[in-house]
Length: 193
Length: 193
DNA sequence: CAAGTGTTATTACCAGGTTATAAGTTCTAT
DNA sequence: ATAGAACTTATAACCTGGTAATAACACTTG
Image 1 (cartoon, protein in one colour):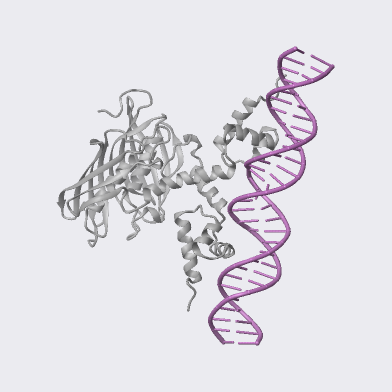
Image 2: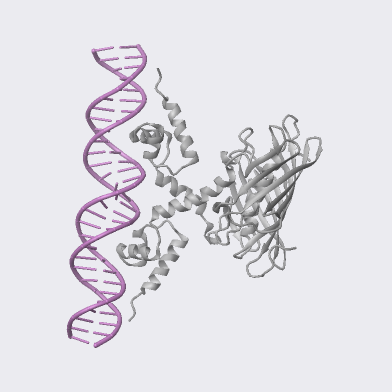
């Protein structure tokens, strides 16, 4: 007779359980797997699985960090040059919160956010909203890369500003975007066509 | 002489501290605010702020909820429905960190990020990158709004997926986007035209 | 001065662990 | 079968980050 469950089986079952509910205590796991709490602890040690609180904290912190990374300052990326109404440059350092864990490639919306921020920053007004954007991603950007975004106002029609953004990593184009932003600082019409 | 800080001030300072780092213990808070731990506890009680573990657990659980189907890929917004390769829905709660301080309007790149996340999530593959996107913002979205993004795969050509995203607040369209995402899980050609 | 308010300290208790140590239990090889 | 190793369980001491209750101190204010 083999034991109702080998250690290998039990451990992979444990991983499965935690995969679809990381908020189980050792007692719940012990109960589920029909072994003692002590065994669960040993298994966690062996599998290098941290305690419940640590798991919760880590999950919370990682998702929180991503939102923070995106929400942070007024401009996504560091503004290094700005000529209002004309052009500007910003640099974004790619941190681990911004990439896909699996392949360390920067998630597209950060490039968009950097460009969008630049487009908005270029307009000298209190209330500026993005109306539309047409963007294209040329090359993947990786963890620790520095993305240089150059934005230029190409045309102004009334309260609409047309802004072109080109982003580079190592002098290679990785992203291009055409943004239309609208200055709605005093006029009534908001974002209507 | 009033005390160096009134209770009101201290409590709002406490809220500020926790707003930008919810993972502070009572001792760290006490240290920061130059009062005793007991006072911090009283303040938390008064402000109805739960203990650290509860805060972490809540943050973790909220973003983790229902994402099981996705196997750990994070999405901007909470995924509430997902039919791989077909369509899905996510909801984004607009918090104060996502808006322009001046007018409480949601910054455009969050709508883009929500849409982009959905587009990527819809493809059942390990490595999915955004190739291009064409987006339009119809109405401003405000603090505390709930943005419902509905994404649909409209066409698949080889490893390219065309995804339409429509986002709503109170049944009104606020954002539309056409995303082209590429599955590069095994093929060599990466993002080249 | 007394009273009330705000703050601090102290004690007992709890969950969900860690770490170490010892005592079963089961498998395996001789 | 039986000793030894491997595995499992139990036990006790300790830790963090709290809750809850109670008491004492500090300060203003009538």
